[in-house]
Amino acid sequence: MNQATKPRYDALSRAFHWLTAIAVTVAFILGPGGFGRMMHQGVDPATHSDIVWHESLGLLVFSLTVLRLVWVAFRPAAPRFAMAGWMHIASKLAHGALWALLLALPMTALLALASEGHPLTLLGGLRLDQMPLIANSALAPLADWGDVHGLLGDAIMWIAGAHAAAAIFHHVVLKDRVLAAMLPQVERR
Ligand code: HEM
Ligand code: HEM
Image (cartoon, rainbow, N blue to C red):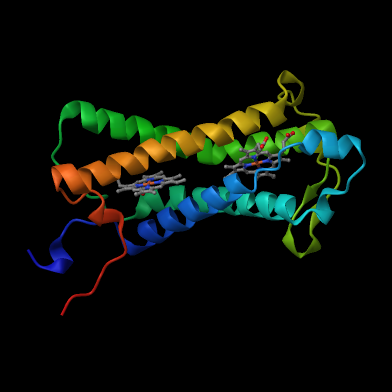
């Protein structure tokens, strides 16, 4: 089989995947611990570059995910691989959970900021001091959205870690093309 006919994700799906994986990982590393305490002390979050980067990367992840879902509806069919039924179901469940978390993380963050009256502070000096539509929504009083957001942030890293381990298992133990299908194409002469 030559390189061109080997099953792989299209270039745009691969670019979306790796950009998202990098942005989520950096956002997670910059996750602002002690945010509530800082806000009570009257600290302006715009003066903390980790918070500004965290929120900007998180919103980038949200935009990439929405565009990516639109692309999934139109793109060439994703490659399919022969594997045990349970493995196929496990991969569908993991992908479903990852998609849901990629959307839920930014949503819970905006609910947390809006319901507590904290500003959204982004790169380039962009800020939104009030988000009345979200603050007055029926969802706002239902939970401590900051806590929910932090838990979901931990959850996505655990699931992405298991998902990455499964991809490496496919490559190293099962020796199939699941991981290669998502890797950048390496040109060989
Ligand atoms: C890829 C998406 C994201 C991930 C993986 C993520 C992860 C996390 C984690 C793990 C924490 C808890 C940190 C700690 O307690 O040590 C956190 C807190 C926080 N994140 Fe995110 N986050 C994401 C997106 C966003 C976005 C889009 C925003 C803003 C719009 C945001 C704003 C915040 C805020 C304000 C807190 C502090 C919450 C509180 O303690 O009340 N995050 N995030
Ligand atoms: C935060 C990190 C990550 C997230 C959120 C994530 C999310 C996803 C999602 C949503 C898909 C489905 C893609 C589609 O249908 O276009 C996918 C596929 C895939 N991911 Fe990830 N991923 C992450 C990290 C990784 C890492 C580190 C690896 C490799 C070590 C990896 C390997 C793969 C592979 C091989 C596929 C295709 C699987 C298949 O066809 O069954 N991912 N990922």
